[in-house]
Length: 483
Ligand code: NAD
Image 1 (cartoon, rainbow, N blue to C red):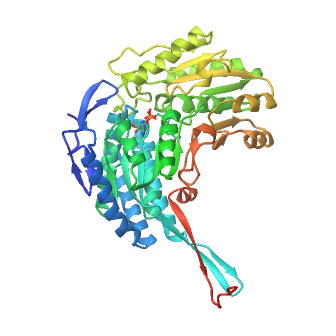
Image 2 (image 1 turned 180 degrees about the vertical axis):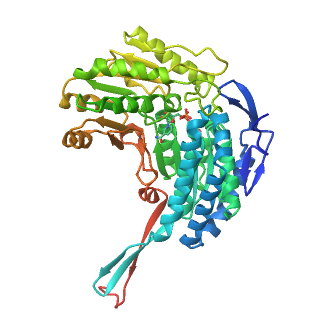
Image 3 (image 1 turned 135 degrees about the vertical axis):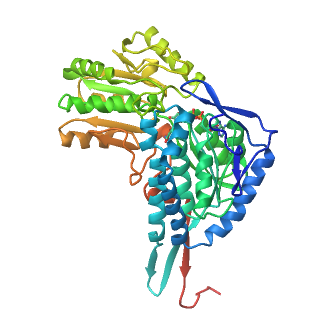
């Protein structure tokens, strides 16, 4: 098998397996070929992971922030050196074109490790003078954090969660998606090589039940999930019962609003990137493309022309720019949405069919004449299905863009910058873009509002979600008491 690791799990600094765990078959989505066979974590594996994390966390939290940062920065360097191998593995696991994984996955993970490795030593506490007394604050780790990942950006998600967690002095037990379990194991190897104590970052495999076991374990202080809204509701409820901290990076149905004064070519590029990159499997995608009436038809025409640039083929071939869906199940879900759209009266202008190859391929699909009430305009599809909707006025479009339970992202294209800032200020979304789409540099906070989630990843704000502040009052005089 092409990508069989030395064990299913990575615990206490080494690969570990327990054949008693349920079998997880890992497939190359571009062909359906089995590339690895793993086992889900048994209670014994979970116990070993949490126990080793407890021991490692005590040592790690006692290190200076500068020493912790050095390990993270060393790990970032190793990731960069191994970028090609990590990218090939990510392509095998997810089916995303190598052209994408080379620049967007381990590369973004390395940026994140470097960033948090760089800022943590400069993150000093507050000193609050109170006359002759004073208060100072200490940023303290939470303890053991659980990370639970989705399948679209596996090593990026593992990095975005572990880097701020480890920088703050926590340990992490990470459960990748059962669909894409491989690359997190490589990250675990890299942390050890960079000097992290064994047990600081453990990887355990499994389906939802293993995630649920982490979310309910009293030894886990925080759960950071990247996944769908329904899973988020379950994990948040489980965490609440244990009064655990949470970060919830969930789904979206984000609006991409194109005003009639926009640079048309850039707006079309953004709609393509924001719907078909990673074959549409991106949480922040701008899947509701609202185009102002005057340019609606020319926008659609140009979009149709640009879609002739799609190159389908083996995703390991770097000239290929479009990959399959991650699994047969995901393929069925997306095809179901396409059928529903046709049945509800949307006009199919591109794609709409499976691509005739082994594996799980669906052509980039565009629907026009979509209305706000249609299923494809309301529900997250997580596939290559773009809905184009018309609008007339600014107030109207703000109301329609916000009329969703989600609030992950939003984009506005216009040459009128006053209007851009005015509209963005009224949009209910955690991340907005003006005249671009889907850029998520580590320096900028990322996360959702409404049902799309809680907490922020990336940027210095992520530190607040992996630490707690202790306030220390220091008196220099006598204590006054009434008796
Ligand atoms: P999913 O919700 O099915 O699974 C996510 C993870 O949760 C998996 O590891 C799964 O095993 C685990 N899980 C499932 N049930 C659980 C339970 N009861 N308790 C604990 N863990 C459980 O999501 P998916 O299909 O893997 O990923 C796609 C979804 O993720 C989409 O909705 C997408 O928008 C979202 N996503 C969000 C972001 C973001 O940053 N906001 C990024 C990527 C993906």
